[in-house]
Amino acid sequence: MPDSEWTNSTATLATILLAIAGWLVAHFHKIATDRRQARLDRINRQLRDFYGPLYAILQASDEAWSAFCQKYWPNHGLETYFPKEGTHLLKEEELKRWVIWMREVFHPLNERAERIILDNMDLYDGNNFPPPFRHALAHVSSYRAILAQWEEDDFTEYVSVNNWPYSELMKIVQPKYEQVREEQLKLLGKRVH
Image (cartoon, rainbow, N blue to C red; front, side):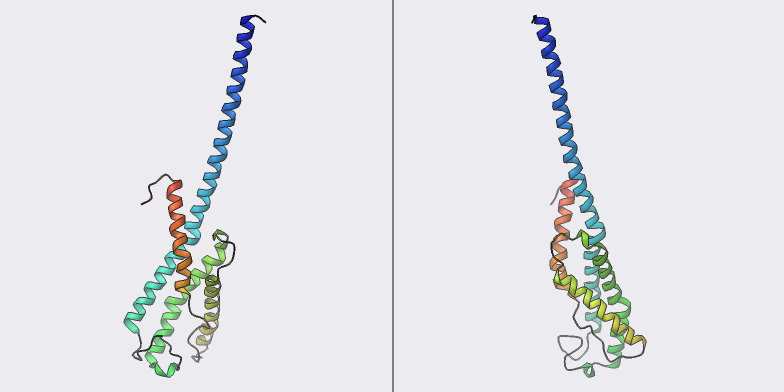
């Protein structure tokens, strides 16, 4: 084979190999970019539709509860608003105030948390349905029965069969929110403090 044919063959082979290498690099770069974008899309949805709003609702609910307790805590001096000893320890205005705050503040916030959990559970990072989520859903559902009783002027019950699991929910939601937010910032190329 003459030198010019060898040179042409080598040049052709090198061109083909470079084209294949370029295609492979572009292909694997696209796969990595698509994976990164898919991860970022999921994280954005988690923050927008699940962890973000749920975290905000829990904080708002806690602020409302703290303000209520600070301003309206009964004079009975006990640890809970409704003592085990019975509602007879509460004054009529304290019971009425509870009904108003439950109807207008606490239950609507809890229902928003319920809606977020039910509508966006696919965005939860975990294998099991966490017990605090079940407890929150049970709390909201059982309060619906109490609210219905109140609509019928039946005030024999004031509390749900279970308490709102604020602390347990925050143990799940706050760290996950912070973790997902940090991952979002990293994927966006922003500095994480």
